[in-house]
Image (cartoon, rainbow over all chains, first blue to last red):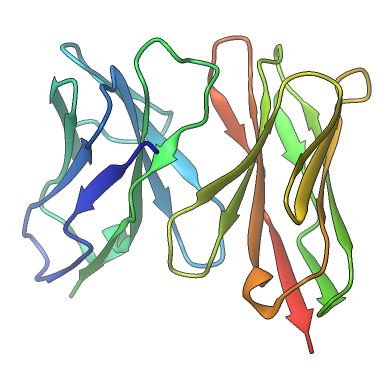
Length: 117
Length: 109
């Protein structure tokens, strides 16, 4: 089955640090990848849609200069949380959809738990 | 606006059957998904309905009625490991996935 690898699984760092999270589709090509954030006991919140070779589409209220997304290849998207602060602490999850299969389910990475001290 | 409604929390007994309902209002419809999410983990795909009717997959079944904007996830022979949140999500006409807030299912012995 389709596998999405997300790395790292956990990050603990000081306030002001920038953190990069990688999302890779291992056995399929993904023109589109999605970045979600989830606070404890809340549902998934879509932050942005990452499109290979073009600019990401951000949801309302998500700062694009704060959350930098790069989707340079059909198998890799990265999310960089710049100058992270404690309020950015959350569970970040990526998902990917196989190219040409818009009606099919998204496949999720295992998530990255980010803790900013 | 677009929204997905599902109960916040449900409790059931090990070995029993539970039905989790989901109603939706979206701009167009291109399929409904159910995901399972254990605490602290990413969601895993359970089922997909795009046509009316029942889709069965082992102990889990999912039903869809597009005219009513309604779906349910049916879990049979409940096991303790089924304790999780169950997320209903609908793909709209723009192929955007609209997520429900999830139903936390608590299984008691």
